[in-house]
Amino acid sequence: MEKTRSKVIVKSGYLFILTNFLLAIFNVIVGLISGSLAIISDALHSLIDAISGALIIASEKIASHKKFLDRREKIERTTTILIALIIIAVGVHIIIESIEKIIEPSEVDYNLPTMIVLISSIIAKYALAFYLKKSGKTYKSNVLIASSAETMNDTIISIAVFLSAIIYLIVKVDIEAYVSLAISVIIIKVGLEFIFPHLSRHHHHPLESNPDHDHCGKSSPKSSPKSPS
Image (cartoon, rainbow, N blue to C red; front, side, top):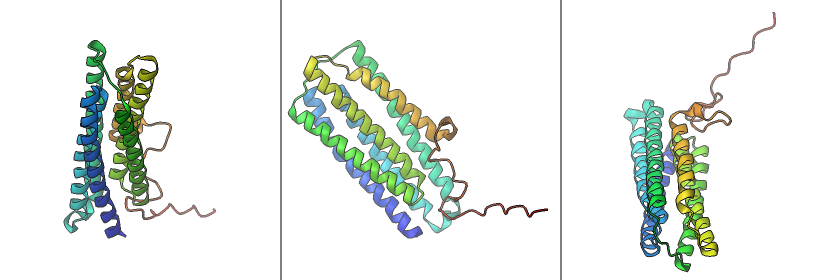
């Protein structure tokens, strides 16, 4: 079970790197052609996500080593925090870029190839987020769950850019900077919740421990019921 878990996490890391690297290349090309700051920012985000993939692989390689088996939870927690910091950094970057575009608007040219790439990006990111979340829950990996949340953020950003493009094509009003600004706040909130799980008050947070299971999914001993007096 442990070997299978490790293999799945490493495989997910490589898939995470490959998907984001390819998306970054396509988004850079389309962003430069269309002049869309949001698409170029999304490309930068994908490149940063590739770094997260490297963190996933590195942390699992270290944690699965015999010398560090007893420190696995601490290593994964540290990696999760690093990924959360990347999420927050991307959110701050988008805020800065959005404000700059609001102050100095630039002309955008959305065309059919641009729309096709945006739709493809949304589908690819959503599929990756679904896979990471499913694998993370199956193998009790907080790192994969954090990466899934980060990828879902990317999906939401791409959807926002796509909707902004549709609105621009219909009414010739560019709102992508305002949409990106609103989404960046949500992204930063998600990143903070991974560092401080108790910020998420209304739902059970993925990084909060399950009282009935330890990190590796083994049932924890429950307190025995009191004998009747």
